[in-house]
Length: 515
View 1: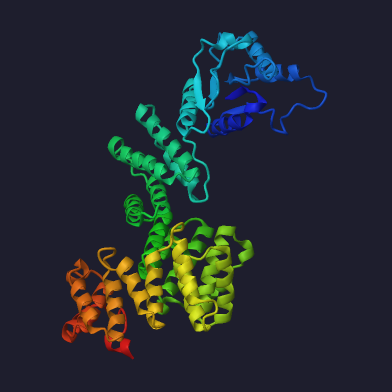
View 2 (view 1 turned 135 degrees about the vertical axis):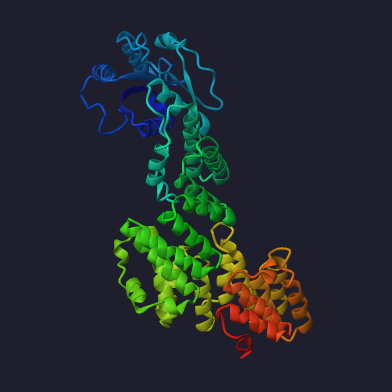
């Protein structure tokens, strides 16, 4: 399928956008604004135009106030004239597209364009995603080719080709599928423009429509893409549910497994994160992805201080990665892993050097910033530990950083340096009910109060913690451990021992916390 697109050079930015869309539909065309296809010096322009129009299957005039102007649009008038003489109108092979801009005067057809006035037009409003998608869909329908959603490679959607391939399997002749492809195309454009709230509405509608109209389809990547969109908006629980939905349809999907690893890493569930990353590495068919997932697993292990899982083989694996062979985004998280290895193997000077580099580049996440904070404490406050945490709490407004974890570390830093009121304010304004209900956080704060001989405050907090669901129904070793800590701080050592034994040695015996 080949088009001849007639347009004024003054409309080139808008036409370029349409050309990109046509290419996504596998439609070919002559682009004389392209240096490679341009008219050579000395070549007759009218002759070349006539040749290209003859070679086209459809003539597509972009009609604007510029193209119809006899002075500005000298060649566009000539191109329309050639198309009419070659019989494109009689064959139904002319597809006019009106280009509309805010503030433009109404288009007055004149000259050769008057003969196009009564033909069916498509309307394209510049910088309007809806009309852009509608034009691509309408043109595809008119030339009788299936509309392909305009899904392009985006940095935040590295699995875009898999996504596109899966979506293509949904094509049928009925209108439901055409509607779904249109919604997906809108999603892609909004996501590309970082309009994440609107793109999330589109992908939610898409996945809900699949459930309703195509219950037999067990799609995977629409839910993975939905999860990535939700992560961009900080909707962690929703993203986790979306990744899980993808795994319900394909339990061995490496992208969904890696996504669950990221979610658990964010939530501080490092052991579960490591398990997911390991599965992602095993099931990935892409060697680069498998390597990256293994790097993520090692970072999770070190972040969670799961030292029994950090083997000499894992250390050698990280050390032997050649950064020169990596893409830019891969270098950042591989550097984080190398820095974490240096930290946990007591190579502190080398770790500080890498963390300072990552900090300067703005690529540290909360686990990296915590390690950098600990190093600064160890290195006698160079750089200032407090400033590191405050910086990344502020950055958390614009990045996927768990601010509450950093606030807890900052509050404990204030306690250790005698600034009780500052630490207490952080806990009460951000980390305790009604703002947040976390058994681990409440237990850790109660422990701090106990150490500072604030018995009444400690007892009050312990009583409040017993009202949490995790306290009455602990579900994993961590919850049993912190239930036991609450019991121990409340003077219930027998009950504390019971919970501690069911935590399977999640942490040290509580008495050792006061050594």
